[in-house]
Length: 122
Image 1 (cartoon, rainbow, N blue to C red):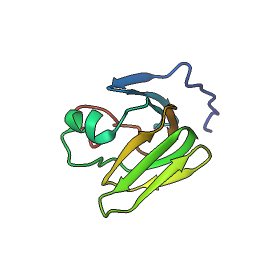
Image 2 (spheres, rainbow, N blue to C red):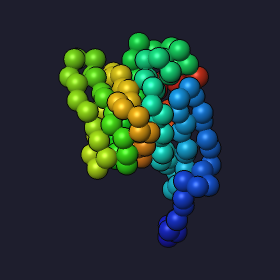
Image 3 (cartoon, rainbow, N blue to C red):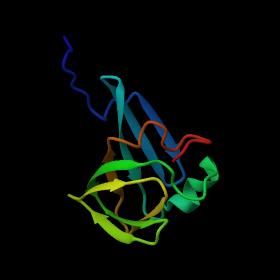
Image 4 (cartoon, one colour):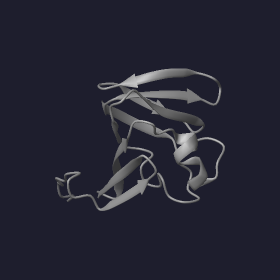
């Protein structure tokens, strides 16, 4: 029988820092969930592209937005803004950036496992 788990991001299993942001990773029941924080001025194509060496973010994401405004542009040109309370499902191939002066914080159930690791897909 599986056991229940109760965890908090205040005690993550791993913390990855990158320019203008951080990823706090919890491992639970064989999977990972991440809390991603992006500071004002953060943009994937400026801050993570040099780390992962891909043309755009190749990590798919399934995210709940806790705070801030996140601009998102898909490689096909689709563009929108996600705000607190939104849920986004992003396939591979996108850029994103913080809009305004508030940190963007998201909980990511799908793309956190390799996010912001050198030569990873994110």
